Image 1 (cartoon, rainbow, N blue to C red):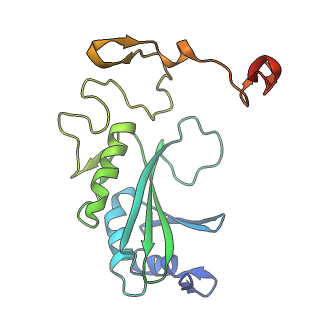
Image 2 (image 1 turned 90 degrees about the vertical axis):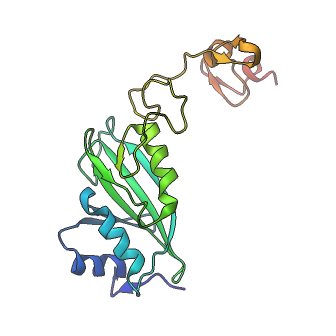
Length: 201
């Protein structure tokens, strides 16, 4: 089925602009995808509207993910260091919509668990990897993906790369990844790619 349209505009954007004009910040089209940029505090209302509106029926929660823009020097869609991007699917129309919010450190993101139970684990993953807090779906006293004693949030831009020994069975520690790094065919190493010196060909 075709993507629902209202003239030359996506129907989702047109209906949201009428139903919640104060919630919609901007609509972005990029490489065939539509992004609805909305206010963080209105995310639950917006997603519930997209899900329950009989003309839209975005009733499938595909995923949500985080992004850290602290090192991004180009134009942004939203203020705030981080973005949370929700990927929703309408099975009725076989169409997809992305909903984005901006969030800074110290700000809480309302959980979508009450709208889509499938949001619980992706939100916890974002919380564990980026340090964002989803109100109503908090990590309490333990990590979700990382070990409980892990310090920091690995997907933040300032998090250091590598440098940790690998723990094997029987408490044997192996070398860190960078200690064993070796060039291989196809890898650029000292200006040589796939060369005799690097790839052995």
